[in-house]
Structures are given as C-alpha cells and as structure tokens.
Image (cartoon, rainbow, N blue to C red; front, side):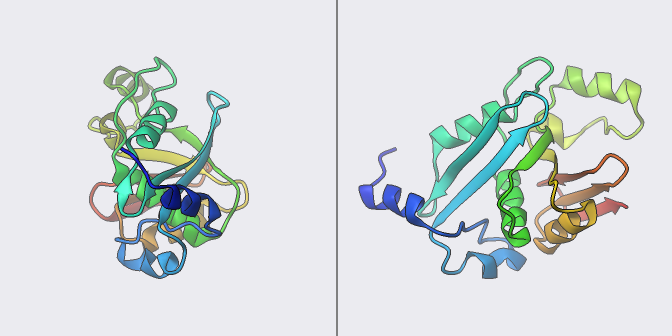
Length: 183
C-alpha cells in the first residue's frame, strides 16, 4: 500500500491522535485531531516497546498491524496471531480519553490455546473460551492512572468488554459484547 507524502507528513505533524472515531462516546475526542490512530505500549514481559501509527486517512496500515500482531504475541511460546483491530482501536480511544502520554504496559495480549489451558489450570479467573485466544483482548495498566480511572474511560467508549482487576492492578479490554465487571 503506497501512501502519499502528504499523508505521511500529516501523520507525523499531527499534535493529537484520533482514536477510534466510530465509537459513539469517543467521537468528540477525534475531531480536529488529524486523521491518524496510534498505539503506544511496552511489554512488561519482553521489555519491547511499540509506538506506531496504524491507521491513516480512513485505512489501516497492514505493515503496522503486522508489527502490532508481533508485539501482542504469546510471550510464553512466541506464537503470533492476528489481533483484531477493534481491540487496538478500543485501547487507543481509551488512551486518548485519559489524555496521558505514557505508554500502556501490556501484560497479556494474544494467548495460544496451550497457554490459556495452562493458566486455567492455575486460576478460576481464566475463561475457557477467552477472547485472548482469538486475538480480541488485552490486559493493560498505566502507572499514572488507577484501574478505576482506566475502566471508567474504557466503559465510556461503549466498545466491548472491560474488566477491572484492582488486586492485580490491570484492566482487561476486549472487542466482544459491551459489558463490564470487577472492582
């Protein structure tokens, strides 16, 4: 996919990032922000970082999504899976609503079925048909925001599942049915 010089310059010149303008509650945050979406994360498991524009002028950038897929891989066995772009959009929209510059810390992205089964054997809190195994979920945290603050921002997007895990200090995001749980 070839991008125009103008689109590339626009992506780097934008001072604010548009995050998931199709989410009803996030639309206001997208206006006047430039026509790009970006995700900024680091992995607490691998030490890797990603700060990438993955959507420009109404289109996803396949190469960028490929990098996101690799970043979200199952860190236990290095299996890579396509991550549903709706999950990335959900994370980006919430990050934008929170108005933070720090990256999310990714705790869990894609989980292979073998990893999910191993985790289920250790904990009752792991779903048998977890959306992590479909590339449709992520568990994240921000140092500067509480679980409740992140969850409230995510819920305002009306974009999928939001789980509060206060004892473990993370928020679960998924692009499944619109619902929320936890404290």
